Amino acid sequence: MNAMTRLTGMNALRALALAASAGLAGCGFNGAENAEFGAHYTHPITVETGVSTLKVGVVPGQPGLAPSDRAAIESFAAAYRQRGQGALTISTPTGAPNSGAATVALSDVRDLLNENGVVASDLAYTPYRASGADASAPLILSFKHYVARPTACGNWTQDAAFDPSNGLMPNHGCATQNNLAAMVANPADLLGPRPMGPADPGRRNTVLEKYRAGEPTATTRGAQDSGAISEVSQ
Image 1 (spheres, rainbow, N blue to C red):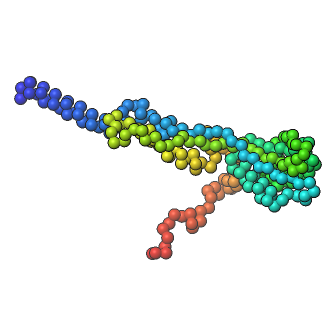
Image 2 (tube, rainbow, N blue to C red):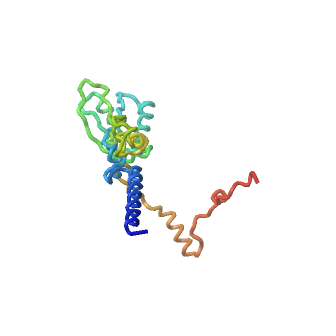
Image 3 (cartoon, rainbow, N blue to C red):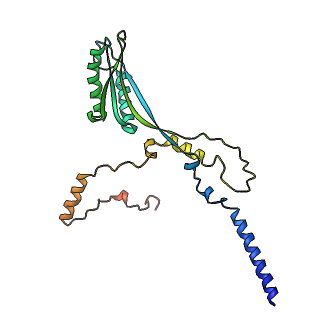
């Protein structure tokens, strides 16, 4: 084989290698910029602030809260514990004929909230000016919370059957982002991680006492924690 033949053979190998690499390139994204366009970037979830409110009726001469109001306040307290941000504000009417009854109802509402896990340090108070003719001006409970707003889906403007660049479709990942926005229990988790909770001093003291006594500090495992296969079929 002379030098010319070897050179021709090497050129043929180079051509085959280039053709193979071009074919493989068709299976990937057309450029690094497309590879960086994740669904969180092309279809972001916007976290906005909303306000939840509850009006509690105040009737002069009524002993305590009505059963329907008690149930509503209990549900409102549960919602606040789950996703409330900042204080739970109680607005009381002033200038209304039932202002005195509102003061009495405020005490009942505060006690009921405390029974449902909303303590005094979670509460804030503010008055509001009510109409002098409104004999049933309510107490207004409110708190701020976060709302997840996804982008709209349905952009099918690009032909999926013909895309020489092999890029991302405009609708790529949109449904996943919408599902995430709908399922997240507290949209505040999309803004960043939650702070660590306090340590368990009781468990810590138990471990230290066992360590000082030379006993095993691990939690005792029962039969259900062994991971063994059930013997029912054996």
